[in-house]
Image (cartoon, rainbow, N blue to C red; front, top):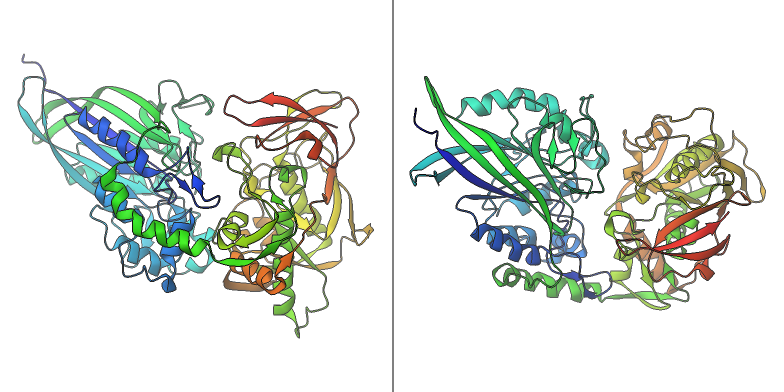
Length: 612
């Protein structure tokens, strides 16, 4: 019996590039050693050259995430008629296909369609229902030589998915699009793809690595998706993690050493061009009666390769970006006002963040103007905001530090990184207390007398940690978290928030408050959804929060927000916790607690020991 033909196929993958196209940090005005697709492009070129057959795929969130993306999406930018810089870079790299991510919808459908109109590769979203939307899947053919030199035409199916919550996160999309369950969509689509000739199927899942067993409308569905018969390879994303790698824990269906989900080869290549996913497939081709030859995966090697900061950018990808780069830098240099104090997020997770307070002040100012003359004008206004640049998966450079002095447009982007829109909702005092309780779930439990406990829950992103300006409170870390990051109750008996006061008096549970926030917080899913459901929405605007911030600073010309913390941890003598923060942070800067330096982490964060 003759030996079955054996073929080799390399799959290269990027994900969550977030408009980090060049190795430049627009928020600091300095070169970036960590990010930049043009540098990743050099690694892509090298890995392509090693393979006889190769696919290059992207897994979504490529249109939003840096000021270049913000400016490219503005109608007044003059760039709407030009090719979008992300698409120009991806065309130059010769991507074979890309999936849409949830953040690609942040600027609205018109901007999305305009950007994608010049793409020379198929853009995919199988679980998206949208008029004149992207394709659900695509079939890619390759002529690949076997071990004897004979060439075979093979057909690879590539299908894309995005989180079903996308429509909820961007409220202005309601009614214009719908997103279905990822796993259920795949069950329906896979037989159709096979019937059209797909011999293997690669899933571009803009979705995190979650439970093996599917649940309705799960956000992190990559593992459950991989378990479906008919899925051969999974590219995961959305959570900005690196897989395979040591930071994702092993679990049912998850092997972070072998790089498999439900036994299928899988990668998640970081974000911002930090890593390149590489999957080498060893395929066998066997004839089947009455059907196209069956292509089976006989073996695989999976890795996520970090991009060396010393790697130069690829010239043919860099060149088409330079005009947009220069325009972005020029616009970001526009002067807005001045700050009399430093605006730093180094200690934001200890309540010290003058920049966050400035955002809260601007939101309150705007909502007060909007409600003037309405029945709500005399209701006290509180203001909630979360830190967007607080380390985490963004690394030790992912903090804001603006020295006293001039404030330019780039500083506004640093203080408010996402294109959220201003909103306001009517809440009771008990609602407000519960809002803070949900935020306090960011912190790990520190039992009495425990030493050097990691302060933060690594699965809880800082952008879910709302601080409400206008109140005072304490957080009791000896008690377990009341909520999980998905908003479900973890311990119904536990409450961490104590001593909550408004204007020096205990907060009345039945008191009425207007909470200035953003439309992302009004989503019907996520951590805060039970608190916004059925509550009166007083303001829901198309105005971006960062534009509110810019108007507030411009009107005042000089601002001087305080970084005195509105909250502190309840004293626990003999207990301590470790906060990972910027290498620029100093223990003596901590105001509410005694603190000392406790070294550095392997990935470059400074550890500050908080003496509770």
